[in-house]
Image 1: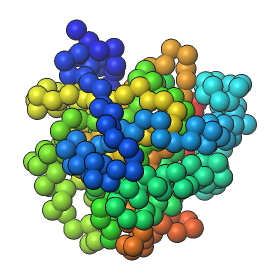
Image 2: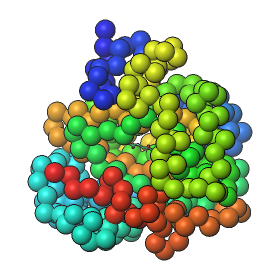
Image 3: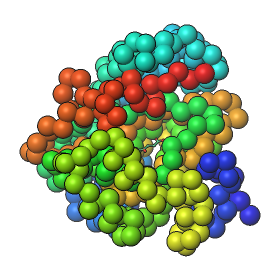
Image 4: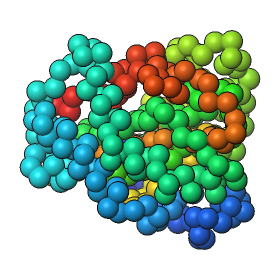
Length: 305
Ligand SMILES: O=C(O)CCC(=O)C(=O)O
């Protein structure tokens, strides 16, 4: 029996598929947030973001893509046309994708007081968002392979959390984030990437190898069967958000939308504001990103055709 959700083209067996648990308390309950993160490695918050703010960010991003011929009218529907007039990001130095990622409405969502209050409660002190954010319009047939986040963001501050924000509804068939239940306790996968001296070498190859090694990126079903666990996800709605630890194995389901809907999400990291924000990959007016080419190097920067 299969769940109808697919990962890397394979349907997930029903007994290996589950739903993320809704957070049972208030998004301002620091003690419960901390306990839930510790127990589960994630917190799924329902209906905590201003729906108008999320909708405005969605219209802004899809409006820019519609101008490039990639999204059909009305842009908020997020339906891909399969064509694009966009300049290759290598030919405009990432300028287009930088301007979309720095859009005013998007930043009001990712760096505004609503997110900051939730992340302050999560961090138990005032939060600082990374300047570099990962906006991901993901077409049918596309997905993110399984990985741990810590190697990418190991820097001067701890703890850090990743907020995965659905920018509009993201039902399961549109390929939302998926995580491996209990993988924040897979010490045999975590210990090797914790033992690396990232201050000595933060090159993309070192970081990628550490983040993806052993993560079952080529065969996630085999990994969860081997470890007798499940893949967890949710039907995300506008206003929801998911906070995940740097130590939970995650990726995405395949986008199999029958209407060719593009999945739009944004992932943003937050750290204590009192700690150094000096990693040039993620902070500053022109963050370089972990690959070195800034926004132009991101997967989200690729035209949608
Ligand atoms: O949204 C996705 O496809 C993957 C997101 C992710 O890997 C992250 O938030 O770290």
